[in-house]
Image 1 (tube, rainbow, N blue to C red):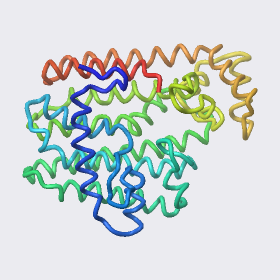
Image 2 (cartoon, rainbow, N blue to C red; image 1 turned 180 degrees about the horizontal axis):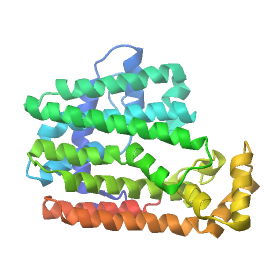
Image 3 (cartoon, rainbow, N blue to C red; image 1 turned 60 degrees about the vertical axis):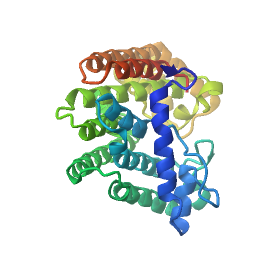
Image 4 (cartoon, helix red, strand yellow; image 1 turned 30 degrees about the vertical axis):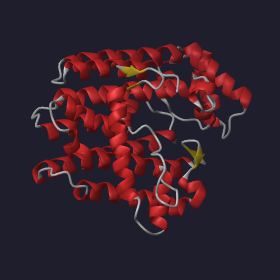
Length: 342
C-alpha cells in the first residue's frame, strides 16, 4: 500500500523512522563546530540534539525495505543504511558549494550560513562519519558482510563523485550529447539508487544481486530525467522551486542536451545563441529558450525517455527475488517517480 500524497510506500516510510532515529542518536552528543554544522544540515540543530531528519531518506530506507523483502533482518543492514544516508548528505553539502546555493530543503544551506570553506569541512565530516557509522553502530552484523558493504559503498560514492565531475565538465561545454549525459547521470544519480538494493542483498544473503542493482540504476534514470523535465516545465506551486532556475543557470539538463543533438534550423540556432553566447538570461530570453526546446521536441522526448526507462525497470523488477508485496510497492513507487510533480 502506498502513501499517495508523498508517493512513498508505507513500508519504506516505516523504515525511514528507524533510520532517522538512529542517525539522530549517532550525531547527537558530538561536540564542536563541525558537529554543530553537521547536525544543522541533517535537521538535529536543537540544543538537546532533537529535531527531524531533513529529506525523505529514500535511499537508506530502501536498504532496510530490500532486506525485509528478501527475507533478511532490516536491523542487520541498518548501519550500512545510515552510512549510505550520510554519504548522500555529504554530497548535498558539497553540491551547494559548487552551485553557490543559498538554500537547501527550505532554509539556509550550510555554505550560506557558515561560508563555503566551513561547508567543505562539514561535507568532509559527514563523509568520515559515514564510514565510522558502519563500524560503530552495532547490530551484531558479521564482519564479512560489513566489509562487503564498505567496499560497495566506497565504490558507489566514488562513482557519484565521478558523475559530479562530469556534470561540471559538461556545464562548461556545448558539445555534450545524450550518450555523454546518460553516462554522467549513471554515476551521479544512479549509483546511490543502486546502492540500497545491493546493500539489502548483502545483508539478506542473496548472492546474485544483478537484477536488483539493474533495477536501481534504471530507477535512477527515471528520477533524474523527470527531475530535469520539472526544472523547465514543472509547476512552481507543486515543485517548490522556480521553473526558470535550470535555464537561468544554463544547466546542461536532458532537454537541452537532447535539443542540441537533435535540433535543426532556426529553433536550434536561437537556442545556441541564447544558451552559449549570453552570460545571463533575462525573463524574455528564458521564455525563448523554453519555446525553442518545445519546437525541437525536447519536452515530449524527455517524457518519452523517462517512460522507456521505467518500462525497462519494470521488466527487471519482475525478475528479481523480492517478495510479491515488495514488487507491488516498488511498482507504485516507480510510477510515482515517473509522474511526480515535485
